[in-house]
Length: 149
Image 1 (spheres, rainbow, N blue to C red):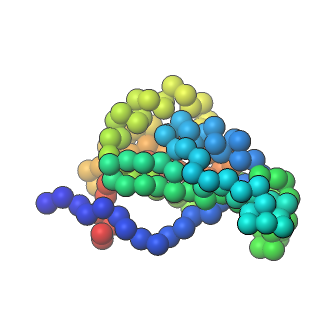
Image 2 (image 1 turned 90 degrees about the horizontal axis):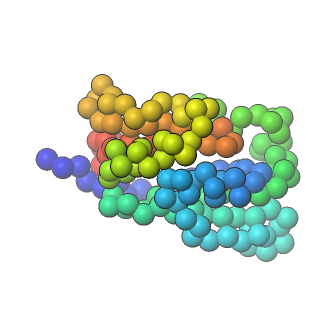
């Protein structure tokens, strides 16, 4: 019995100081820029960007806010030092249709400090690999798992 594709209304927005680093890093995994607004809808010094990855399993969107060090002054995040690693205790999980091909295409493009775990068969019978993006976000690329969909 196959798993259903994932359908939900979660919008992931990562607050970061540099969109170019995000573009370069996520392009390694097949993400392209879907949209960019340097003023986040107007009147802001901070920008907004959406990256998209298309796969047989569907589209993955990651939204980014900031593109300037001023992003650390956000009403919530200004409580923390601006050099606080982002994504502490959060795993961003991206299901993909061909994990082996993706791993083979990216592994030589990543530094050892960017790879948290190489491609591994997990105890639940699915393969995944895990990376750290330039801002400290922990990202897992995985075969489709039964999350209740």
